[in-house]
Amino acid sequence: MTSAAAQPQEVSGAEFQRPRMIRFSDCDPAGIVFYPQYFVMLNGLVEDWVSDGLGIDYHAFISERRIGLPTVRLEADFRAVSRMGDKVTLGLAVERLGSRSLTLVLRCFDPASGELRMQMKQVLVTTSLESHRAVEVPQDMRAAILRGATPSRA
View (spheres, rainbow, N blue to C red):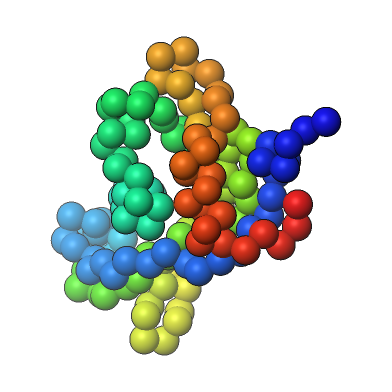
């Protein structure tokens, strides 16, 4: 018999958001965001979410607890361009919480119009940085995720 914590859960809750201005360093010679820069921006959002959204020191999570969050699956849709000087909002929501993984939906959108610029679905696996093998999502992380989300299906 498996515990409820070990069973994957689809979750829905408040989206963690951060404002971001598109910078010169984000753009290609055409003056629009060079697509890999979205991955850099959204990786920063994941770090902010762990530290500020979940209340878990991201630096300590990696360097002291030796738990990694590598990406094992990534799907991205680019809907509209973002240009230098644009003020956008980056958002993160947990779609699914598994025993050793979490599925995130991340997006970049115009905060005034709601226009979606880019969206991606990302699967992260919690791993030991010593063995590089998957480990259970730490209990404090699981509890923080569930505090901010309402399970929709177990």
